[in-house]
Image (cartoon, rainbow, N blue to C red; front, side, top):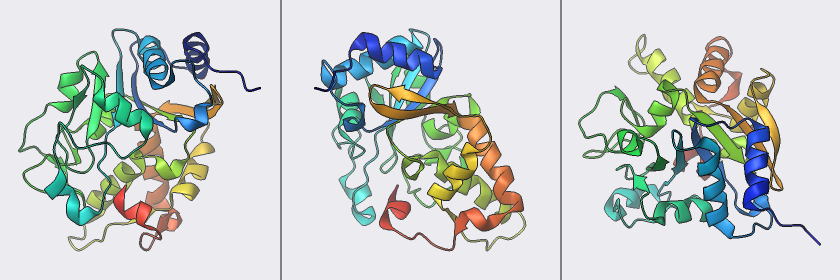
Length: 252
């Protein structure tokens, strides 16, 4: 019979993976991959919050990944459900969780200075992207949670998910696009082959791997990830696709 993960075992697993007090964690997770968990999603969130302590911050995607043409019309910051999994929707609905006002790629936050990460007002500067639409904040603007993860040294925590789910692949794409727009105003947006890019990234030796519950997990610095892949694609564009090969690439 499968043994169940507990609050104590999850906190131990997170520490062994490299999570420390004061960390800012951007968590992308498959609840199912963790296996049986005593107390369910509440236990997972409690373990994450304990791992980063009172001086840390836990962020999760709270994206509204419905048909792109319908996202802005359906968006409600308070009530639109997160479509990124059971754990992220539970996290969004917890009392005290804050959420950014992005009609497509909102981020939910709990912990130290959470409001500083999600309460920025428009207009804002920074990178534009294919998902931007007024009057909402830019998905990767200079006050957006996703860009702040890069700027402020957050860590990406992948619990039982692969690189095809990693949102920061888009930040690499966006920064690459703007770099090329400086010399070519007609430069087209390029889409990473996420699986190939993830395999390439794994070779750099900056990824901490291990089990959290039963979930194969990875922990690494967001800035290191983005800068490493940016340097890689600048000299070799083979990690890009000519166009999205699946709907998941165009909507995530």
